[in-house]
Image (cartoon, rainbow, N blue to C red; front, side, top):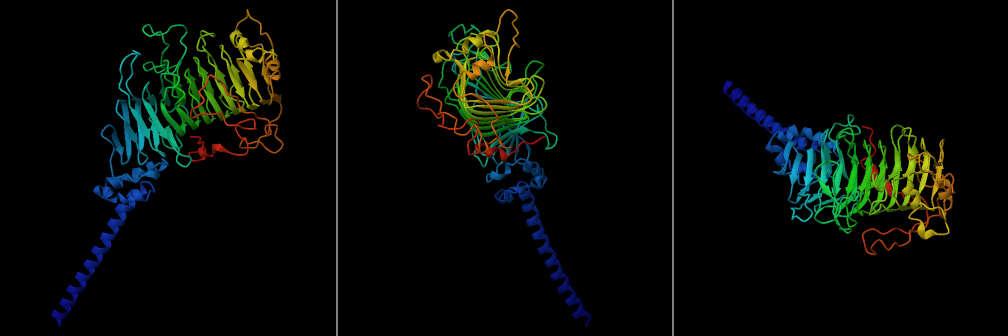
Length: 518
């Protein structure tokens, strides 16, 4: 009897041990794969479970939840690989990059790429005749790049390229490496692209070539040359948040800086948000751009100097209520107003919305000898100083007010609407030079030109024209200009509306990463 009971007991114990062992095995498989899955709701990344199993490093991978903040984890089928040898692994699928690179590389969307400090693509040389090593940085759609707090930035040098070709559903994001809720303007630097296109240089060209070049605001890299059709790559569907770090008391990073960049560089669907200096600035060059959104920056939203002569169509600029400065700040050369090549861009279909900003907030400021054309543009809202301002004798020479001589207009504004709330539409008499008298009013210049009106543009809360808006049906296509090639990636669209939008909202791509406060 005792023997029978003992045998039954042994069988029962063995059966129970087997059952517990099975349960434990299921828990381990679910647990390990599950934790990897957490790393980014990427499902397929989960299949890298084996990598996960490789180590409960995978479990530490719950840092991956940081990845989750990253909107990037999404594309991650290649999650089985660690960080490349030219980077440092900070956590699973978080790779830190710093220094100079002269070989092609790709930043993939299954990882977060952290800029430790300066990341410089391609060799730098002041010698314009030297043979230099160039490289191409490719960034996949949906990739997240984070700048460490301080002087971290990405710079593409002359002759090298960036291929950052996102999509409407998967824009590429550059942002602060701080945790969500702690991010702020000026956390990190920004994105800089240098090229070989012409710039002006105050009459001090390179001694060996006779061609103008300049040293970048970073104090090290060079830009400028004689190649109007220079190609620095593709920036398409790219968002840049929380940049603008101060280098010193005089210099700050722009969100996106083009320095001597040529017209074959594709630039479209760009969003710069909460930069602590300018949103987008052109230092010379011939770069064209379209479908631009700049929001909530602390200085100027579009800025140009040193002879930029590119083109822009479709841009929305929304100033904030605290420290925004100018929607457009346009210079030729601040020290030599008549320098050549003269800044002479052509812009069409902009909507510039005032937010009252600082005490000198202006919609458009044209100064320091700039020329150029502004078509089909709305300037409206609360600007503390006013909507439209022209400064300096050399600029007024370009902005002749004799409408009977249209060929003499090298600075003109046509088919446009201004409507300032609580401040003047036009600013006069604020010149710095007491020895010079303004020859005509800005209002006379504006109203002398075709299609310009002072009127409420009647926009909705997304800055789209409502029924009955004077912006609808009043726009005109920009006529062909012989300065530009007939075949290029950029051509002005034939539109019949004034402002950035007609009946189609092309800016929906910014909703993917939004307009975060911090």
